[in-house]
Image 1 (cartoon, helix red, strand yellow):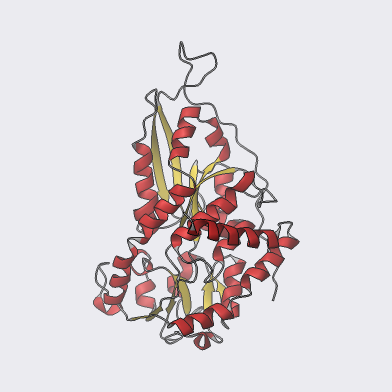
Image 2: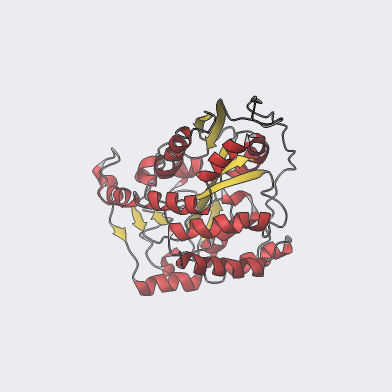
Length: 366
């Protein structure tokens, strides 16, 4: 069941960006000071009502706005949302070419990102954040053999809450693996997700997220989404009838900066950005994000709390340990398929799987 990935990034040329700041007397010849406001634009490819924006990206921007450099420098970040200037599917290219200085990076846009989609593989959102940040940045691209991330500076990894199963009246209440047989389930552009859906016996159907609400019940009858979806994503509540708690994938979005833009910043400004980035920042933001999940889960059950009609609520089915073991067994080969695929593309698939295991063990000792 191996599938070869054909995800490619258009050839990009690092943009020339002028140094910000000025030389100051007594500061050393040629030294660039961060003594004024640096304006940056940032683009999120998701709704401004999504949990990751409200709990992670928005507070991070506030944190950056509070930074003041030793020579009085500050940041001013303007944030946009949605499909332009780039969508989730084109986010790596958009950030790499400077369509935005900072952007929400989707793992579906680079081959190493597929590791973040391994089903039922990571125990927590924090573990996912730590492992993926280190894997994607380790030793200046050791695992990113083809240099797909060469034109971005990864700031931190910000996974979504675990992906749950949302299904329609047409599909029925899908609670166990046997219920998936022959169902049409929405997938994004990531091949690992499609392999997972196929391994569970369903038919993966690609749909952009904007097309999902109008397609539920017709083109597809089920999808993966987080608990924030019923409130933040218009149409999901009306179109679905059932929810099963799977925590299948902690979809690992990241925040990344155009590398040329980062390199153009004065050293003190770079240090300030670095201070709110990295592996520990990834863990901290993941913990802050997951702390808000309980409220949205309750709102999904009751239909109250999102400004929705109560009848949109539904009981959430939580599989038994034995049923979860069946899910894990059905999808156990997906990481091995992925490793074979990326090896064909020039990455060290087996080495990456080994390193992921080491990073999981490393996280447990923190």
